[in-house]
Length: 184
Image (cartoon, rainbow, N blue to C red; front, side):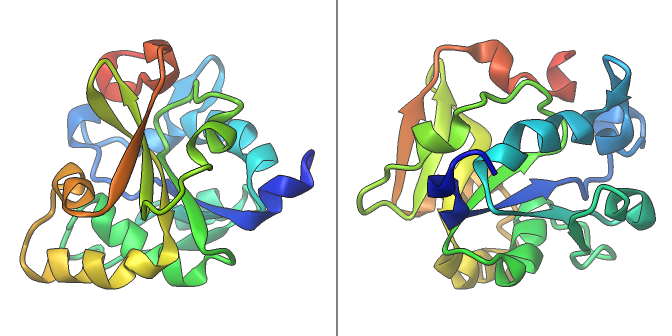
């Protein structure tokens, strides 16, 4: 831990997807510059947070080998990132939780610093060129809101974010938020 101010944040890395756009592959384990995508994400966010939880539904032992807790969501239903967040939030040590996908290997080294100061918003989310990104800090007390969305079959993460009290933080570096779907 390089900065004691960051010990007030937990992190969830979302690695539980079906990998439909990656030909069914487990995206977090796909290689990028010689290492699995998740290794790049862990290396970038670990100095920024106190604890990391990995949301995964496949290759559980492989993900555990990174030394962080791995939580499964209800894998039989495939409800997307909201389901992974809901499963992991109760395990997070802190009220503020950084949420990032496993397939953004170039996240900023100062992501938490830039998203962190949020005043009264429940969510602080990265935005590039007017597009919200799946890189955000959420308040752990949003679990009931996520559960309600899932119960109503509202699976869109961005629709859920927009239904909450959120604040967006503009980033100019589009490449920092490139993911597997954008040809990393």
